[in-house]
Length: 320
Image (cartoon, rainbow, N blue to C red; front, side, top):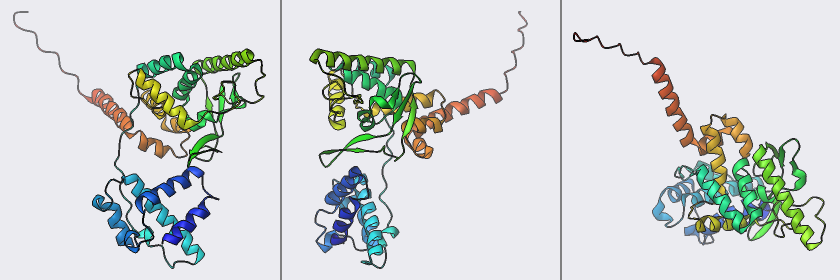
């Protein structure tokens, strides 16, 4: 099993996303640090199920890491079967570790405005893209992967077709998470914000006496579009700005903000899923189920009010 996991990881590097491979590798190293020892490497569906459902067997390790390690073992055994190394995949019979359902936490509109205002004092370029993140729901890697050729300021459209990701400490440029690019409509505020960002880059280039690149990055370390920003570092910068402003917000929560606001406004889940880049609207429903439940309560109240008989007027008092 140890040899198979190592061989499968080496093979996966040529087929899977660097982030996916890094995640699998981390889970295996965390969950099975001594996998060369027979006692630490599950060899049956029963052993995998027991390890995955009994927290005492893996103290201090999150259910997500354990579940991902199980997925890696299942995929490795499938590949091992194709290679003729094993005769069956016993991991498919094991019950995956359940993952606790935690409702997403989205900041309020006032908190987002406060964050943008605080960022303007520290990094105007970052402030504009923080606002764009809230308006479009883009992932931080997708924000860092935007070029000016992806933006149509006339038709008000943004083409999301690449993302910067960090895997094993190295930056990689890849397609969006679902593998498909998408187009996101921009409103007047987003267009005005991007126009401000363009002017900031022009002013920075003029100050240094250089010409802007033909197709620069919207977010760049130099502020002129030459060198794209690191998404992980940008996330830490936004978190630091939020902390200084007395806010508990991280960059990914801006994505939740947009989704919850749209859902609360009655925008169809399929439309929200398209803006977020979810390949399956069912995923959007699962992630934002608490918002859907709130809307369901509102719907129940509307129907209840409509069908509740109107109370009869009280009879007049003899004294009236």
